[in-house]
Each structure stands twice: as structure tokens, then as C-alpha cells.
Length: 187
Image (cartoon, rainbow, N blue to C red; front, side, top):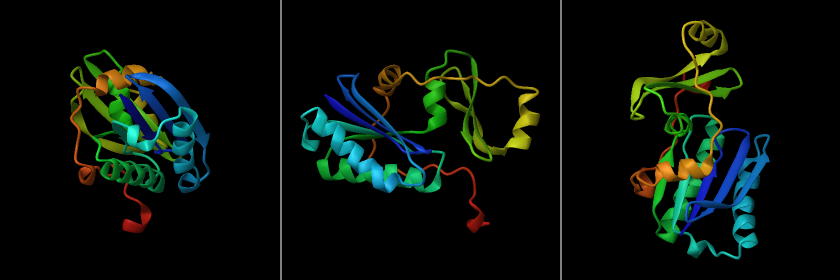
């Protein structure tokens, strides 16, 4: 089974091709607001390197945020389009839950960095959100950190894949970016 993982939530584009839960190829590229230029070519390159046609993909996993407004939209749009056109399952996961899934504690506090602040998620031992996700400016976060311990996680993508096996596939039309921070133009 071939699975394609797409993550464009921040300046690092990450594309992984899995075969039966094991990483075949893992590509990363720093992109300074050029996600639309690099993401599809990276996917094509991974498939070509592994002599796989897109029609051989069995599922797509996409990170839906929070993060870069445009970056998230690009990754989600590519994933939705591919899943729909190939008629294959799609799974969506956010960056905070990705981290929580890999921590084995009763209460987990995870963050995702953003240039002016942090996205914050607090989970129970079963990875249920305890408190609604929120965005904190760096100054607010400095106050928060005085009374809380943040769990730092280096993502093990094969372990993450295992955890996602039980996640429900969703209709590609139902996959949407996760926005937490209200952008200035909408205020």
C-alpha cells in the first residue's frame, strides 16, 4: 500500500512516500512563500524516483494546519484534488494533534511555532482536546510558560503513520484548512 504524506503548513515543505507504513522517500524543501512552485514538482519527483504512477497511490495524508495561511491552503488543495481525481481515501491531521499522538502522558501541552507567536494545544491521555486550540503572541506565551511545561516532540513519521491507521478516512470535499489565528485583513 502506497501512502503520500503532504505537509505545507510552514516554510518547510515535507512530502513523504510510505509503502506499507515504512518510509520509501522523504523530501523536504525550505520555501520562502513559494509553496505553489515547489509542492507538485516534489510529489512528481518522489513518484518518479520510486517508479510509481499516481494511480498506484492508495491514500493521501495531509497536514491541514495551523500555520501559514497560504501554505496550508496549497497543501490541502493539492491533497483534496489528488484524492478526488484518483478516487482514493484521504486523512487529515493538524500539527498539534500530530505531536500529541506521539506523547505518552496523561496531559500533553504542545505548541507549533509561528514567527510572531505559538499555536497551543492541550490534550488528555487519549489525545482528546482538553481546551480549544489557541494562538498566543510570544509575550503571552512567555507568561503561559511560567506555569506550564511544554512537551517537545520530534516527529517520528513511521510511528505517526501507525497512529493514523485507525483514523477515519474522510470525503475529500470535507478536508479543510485549520485556521486558529485571525488574519489582520479579517479583523
